[in-house]
Length: 186
Image 1 (tube, helix red, strand yellow):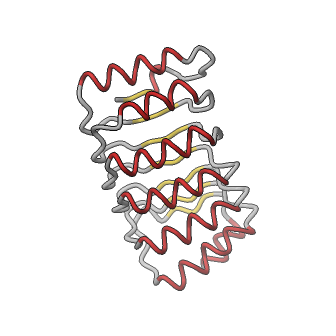
Image 2 (tube, rainbow, N blue to C red):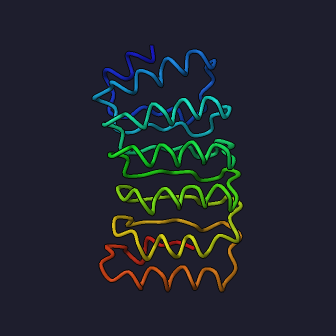
């Protein structure tokens, strides 16, 4: 059944929660490597363990079709962010990564930011409603350096008012940025 979705759909949406065994998911993720049809993979509300997220990340490192990946309400923690950051370093086509309503802290956000300072293809990063509060400096550096990122949602995190102001100022220092002020949400 999952193979059929990959062959026929430009969007695969499991936002009602993916309840498949690890073996079936790994087979599905392996098929993502050669997929040429699916452009959006939405796995919101799923409960996947770290090793399965690692397998997904490895598959997406090679995939050349998926442009949108949504892992919201996914129970992602910092260790999973390491795998996603590694995927971001290699994937050339992912334009939007949505990680809303997870358990990402400063450590996980720093991993993602470090990947995005060298890999500049992602256009939209949504980390709404996580536990990010202290990694303002790496985020500011990212916004100063990255000219590809056009939207960044940090709202719903525990950033101080001073931190939010520093992030907003950093975006303005990037003169070549195509960043839309309405899309920086802190």
